[in-house]
Image 1 (cartoon, rainbow, N blue to C red):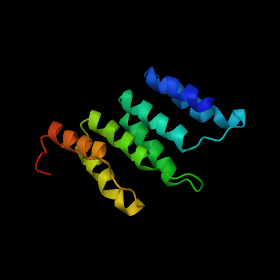
Image 2: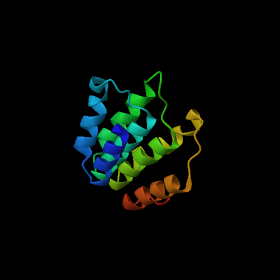
Image 3: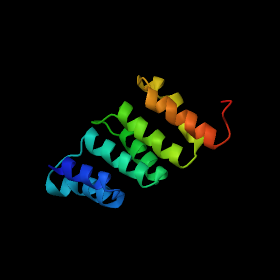
Image 4: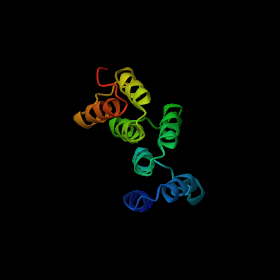
Length: 123
């Protein structure tokens, strides 16, 4: 039920409310799962808050019971693409194999778009 509410916030571009719900889950005796994080990273991307999306990805990287997946990285890369942060986009792409994650077509497209926006198309 909580993830459905977070998803509704993401769809409505209410990234701050999505984050409040994520942070408030433990007080409701709920534990955020990877879906909760993925929705929030996506909400941050839609809200053009790429640094917050990266902070959530970093939080997952240091978590012992949850692991970022392809969807998490895709949403974070999308957030960076929207901000024309091509260097960060490429860094996120480069770290995926180390995490045993296979980038999909949408991730490659977002990286290409970010490089194009940053006039780095030769990368």
